[in-house]
Image (tube, rainbow, N blue to C red; front, side, top):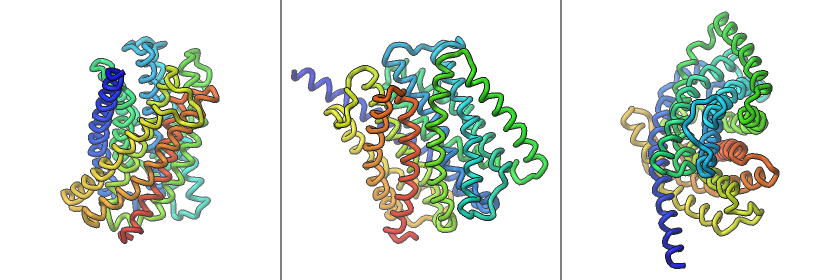
Length: 404
């Protein structure tokens, strides 16, 4: 009995250490993406609606490839994951599904973003063609790099006996922040160019239709199943992220006056999504392996996991505020001061952590009980819900601390 308790405690320490390292690296990586965003003041001002698109574009990368990492993690725990480049292998089918989902969901995001801008009077806003070109091409560009990162992390985790649930979800989510922001800013130079932009948008729509038909009719069963199950939940995630984007876009003028908060936002949302991804991935693995009965009342194991994650969240959110301030000072960006940034991150982070635990458990539990794959449904719903809550809580914390 004593040996069992010692082993359990040792495993929890190892889990916490792996998560802490992954999240710390993730904060630094995502804050670098935030610096690109803060330094793009003129682009954000010239292309109204770009900030509306940003949370959704960032979240899609984390949702798609975080879910892929979670599925590979479950496969590794069940002994079905191996490094094979056969087209019918677990790895390749997941890559194909993730690539197709990235194209189709980016197009959906663009159309809904333009609709949101028009419906809520965000004027002037980019044209539909601008939204399509930036969303899809920026998404594809970052997805190629993120796919490589996901595969390398997954293979390395298996090779070095790291827990994929602890490593892949947080690093993929936050790396998505770093890759997506500069990709969108880079591709935005193709926007607002009349004939060129319209022509590119038309080609993108035609290619997307071909990809959609192929993905729905492919003979690769795992690819087809992942694609079909993911599209509805990614659609819901896009709507939640657009609401988060609208909150941020409406406060653009205030945010441009405290650029350190713009640096903080991608890291903050990335941490929240990563924490949710870690818990969702771990719960999914436990449910698949029969280690938890997925009941409405969480088991002791699930409660312990939630407590461990909550304890870890506090120093990570504080660290993100410190990093945002240091990067802002080093890059000569405006900052409200390290104390206020830490307070903003800590206040908003404390509120978000409560949502992380509740949303992660009940989304993953609900999808499992209804016979759906929690690896596919858990991370997108959790991450996008937290983007919306995170955007609100950051603005709320800025008001409470007197920054705006």
